[in-house]
Amino acid sequence: QVQLVESGGGLVQAGGSLRLSCSGSGRTFSSYAMGWFRQAPGKEREFVAQITRNDFSTYYADSVKGRFTISRNNAENTLYLQMNSLKPEDTALYYCAASNSIFLNAESAYWGQGTQVTVSS
Image (cartoon, rainbow, N blue to C red; front, side, top):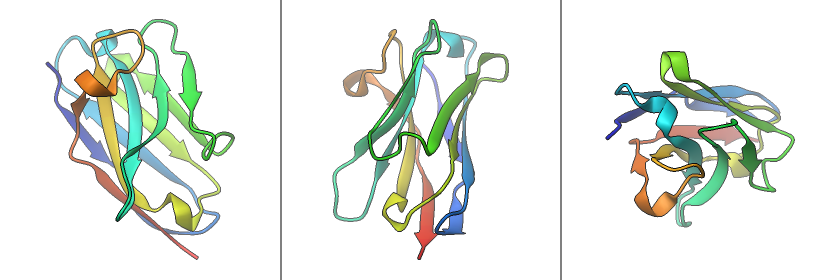
């Protein structure tokens, strides 16, 4: 089992940047595929990005490709999401997720409590 705590959210103007962090507990952080999801008010939670546990391959939603970068530091049990060129439509509650599998499996994932990102126009 892993416990996840997100941080780094906030209010930023359109075009700005933020870096989200997700700190994981436990000694088996490297065993988990990790990822980020987000949920805007009135909308369903949607996939943002994931990074595999073995070769650190990364995958992105089309809406963030080229603007967001996901990375992980297993030595520090931390997952990151660097967000650049932010747009008002990126406003959402961002969740960190982890699953004990090669690729992130949202159905069996552990979830953090979320960190709010608000982008003003």
